[in-house]
Amino acid sequence: MASIFTKIINGEIPCYKIAEDENFFAFLDINPNAKGHTLCVPKSEVDKILDLDESTYMGLMAFSRKIGKALEDAVDCKRVGMTVIGLEVPHVHVHLIPLNSMQDATFQHKVAMAPEEFEDIAKSIRSKIE
Ligand code: AMP
Image 1 (cartoon, rainbow, N blue to C red):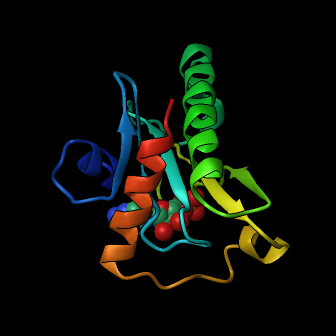
Image 2: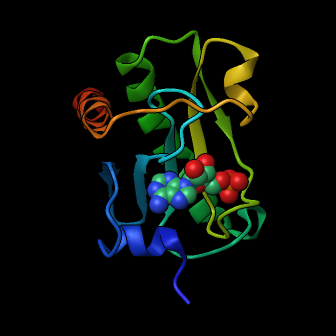
């Protein structure tokens, strides 16, 4: 069965899209640690990051770097953290999280956002992509 992220990539489930290219897709995390929390995923559905072939792994890192730099420009934060966990969704994804304190990196503290706020942040991140 297709993963929830494959359904997002295929447009079967809505998302706040940030960017896509031939092999990768970025969108806002629906339950963010911090405003602007973004997920970068390969379009090929692989569960664990270390099981990616080297080219897809390197491509995902390059894509995440590009989106992460746009996120850093768009959102007021000390830095953007990159985390890979994958215990909830078995489809590789890099978390890009705007960090102001360690709490933002823990996944224990979530922020509520209205749909308009998701839209605004997504638009702002998109506008910073080079
Ligand atoms: P993990 O697999 O533990 O790295 O976490 C999966 C992440 O995916 C969590 O931060 C969820 O909030 C996020 N997530 C799950 N479903 C969706 C969705 N439909 N749209 C955006 N983010 C999602």
